[in-house]
Length: 120
Length: 111
Image (cartoon, rainbow over all chains, first blue to last red; front, side, top):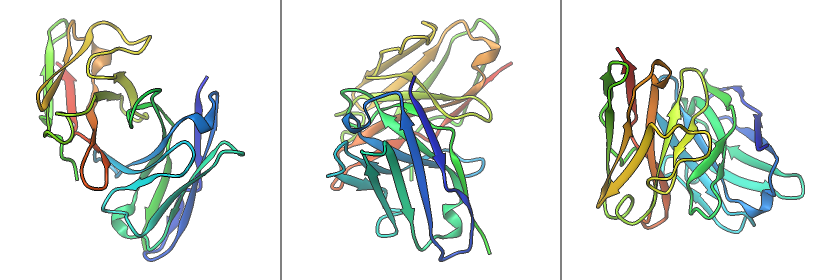
């Protein structure tokens, strides 16, 4: 059974940093690209970032480019999101998500999310 | 910023058929597979349709997807109370830097 468990969320002041983690199990982690997707309170889904299975290719939404860094440690079956220069508009529930087999980026499994609140 | 446009809401009575549209462009829907996700209140999204019209195991055949050109649609037939949720389409976008785009989301209400 695929499981994705996010952690690392919390309250941070504007301009601060936070590192999110996602522990994956139930599948061969390094065979699959992985996403971070966020959802602001009461709003829709917003894609944040994607990383290839070997970590060699990364993609970012314009809204986070230059501030967020996605990475993975395949030896630990873990995905990360380093978030710097945080803004109030980054407040959201952050989901870790697995790419569907054979897909460019379509998602088949989602974690339960970790809440990030940026506030002074 | 969403580049896939969905109607904000849709509704129907139990047993009715509801259709949700998803409008994109040649760089996303027009050249890539469309995925649909269902988000029940207070829960994480769940895969509903993949590769335009395929259902994962466990998804009732009341749900169906289609794609034509730069638009896609999700149909729910035999609407049930448990279908009340938010629905999102999504596709990869072959823009300069590459990105994954979600639809604006549609809230389905069962009257």
